[in-house]
Image: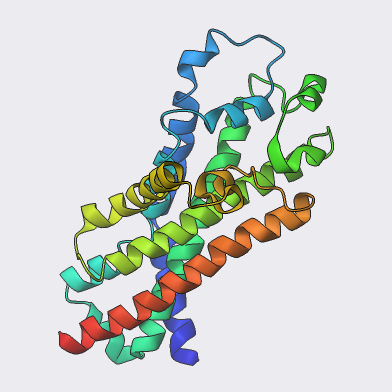
Length: 261
């Protein structure tokens, strides 16, 4: 257990306390704001930040959040493998501790990247727009409509950011596992977006994925299973389960790669 926490602490420093993490957060916030530039000239004073946040979910740049979320943690294995640092790291701990630390650091760094970037976007937009307007109560905000009140708006935003963040976390761990198969940094970074797109297309084309399991509906906080609290638990529960599955696959594949050299 001591080895595990040492490795985890090291990986968290390499992800959350790194320049890459800062660039990812600032970069995603910048892209969020820029994606609305063509809308600014059409906006009226009766536009709220809440409405703009909802609008971002329908922009062409929407899936780019997965790229920025992947930057801090998905390339940990690639970096160690390419630099031949992996054997030295494993010698100081164990294979299980080494792999598990990578999974947790990757998952948490992706979630934090998205949540912090989204709040930074809200902060930037609040310089020009009100966070909430009475007209927002007449708009449709999905499963968390009950939270769209003057006092509940921060809770609504937090819930939707967490849905988006946990999606990024799960797909980042999937990319981490994929990196044990194709040890290429650029391919690894592209995997979350490609996976999201393919799941979305396959689900739409075949109709085999029900709406309550649709990755698009889950990520955009559109799945309602009985109120905001249960809906949030349901959404993050699904993404956490996927992250655990991909994490288990990564641990197995990582140990095999280390053993085979």
